[in-house]
Length: 159
Length: 352
Image (cartoon, rainbow over all chains, first blue to last red; front, side, top):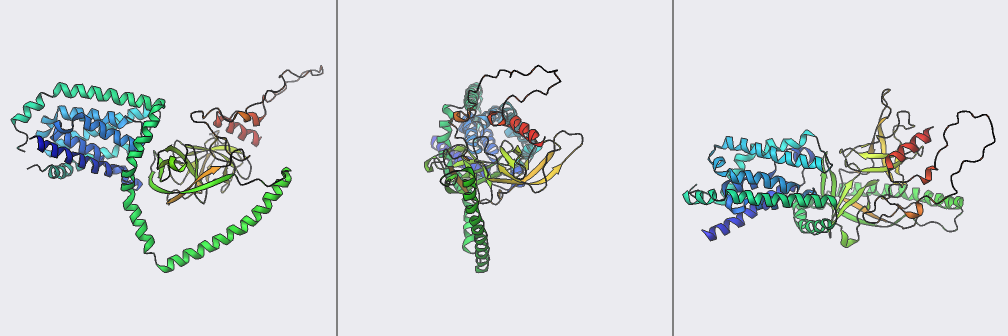
């Protein structure tokens, strides 16, 4: 069990790295508005399916990486991601049993909460960004959730 | 999903309070980080190393685009290259003709100023930098370029392309630096209208094709196609570099201020290579060099000099009329600290 955990920790890091790359990949303007938050979705997946593996630390450090890449206030994404990771880890059993459609709805809620925390911190630090464009990615994120779980289940080698 | 057996279930049940505890810890850590980052200080150093660590991934991420450009360049048709060559030759001829005139003008200017020797150009040296990453959206207009502290790049350095002003460096890492474009919504350039000499501020809009000039009165003397130059105020950019051309003027009888848009001369959306510029210290047109963290103090030599005490002149005893209040200070000694106010004031004054 222990070496298996070790192995899956490596896989988790790999998927997180790939998701981070997808998140910071330079894209044209219209595409980057609809780009789902790949890293947030990946972290949510791991905290729902294997909460013991990454835990809230995974959310915190992924968020910190996002802060560094995006040039945001250090700790902004880290706080938002650890908050939704915490909820996901606490409720993972309930969420896991839901059908895919309901899971997508829950993910939508989590993404909106995440974006809201970012929005609040943006306002607090004096860069209020009120364009509705910033909320679009929550919808696309919820839409790709079933696909993302399918792909990530593969990488985990889940039967 | 055999992995989610009963054993797992119990273990994860037992982690409820622990998760809450670690969440609290991480949340406090994140908030402390945010507060420290807002305050500045030692976290800038931490960020310097963190962004150095992030740079390889940023390079890797941008490599597909770079590879695409490379293949495009390698397999361009001969005809295209010849056409490009011809265009460049024509441009070269045109520019050298202009430079000839420029030299003559420079001499003339020096003579007019009564200087003995010709002034060297204000730009001391230039360094080309490649664009690694480009972020152009409504919230942020930034570039990542492949030159950093190791190449001598400093924070607040002017960045240009061959057509005009691009922006300034905002964050410098060991091997890369982030450039805030003039169209970033948080960026403002002090500019001067070339035709009239009126000073104002050009503010970024978040759109790579447009700058806003929100501080000009509705009756300001400004025309479609007017050229905006850097005014040399603000301490980052030297005086006299082209910034933008006016593309849209809207005057509303109700509004006290005109709504003016200008289009940047630099080709912001087609950037592959930019120029980092170092300026000659002490040159009359050079920007005031700022010490780190003292963005408001300015150059002490440009501060107001202690003048004679401001006692009212003894006026002959005449029947007093309602005199207009005398201007309190000369415009040249106006502090550069609140640039918006100062610029609008000068603008209105110039218009009157």
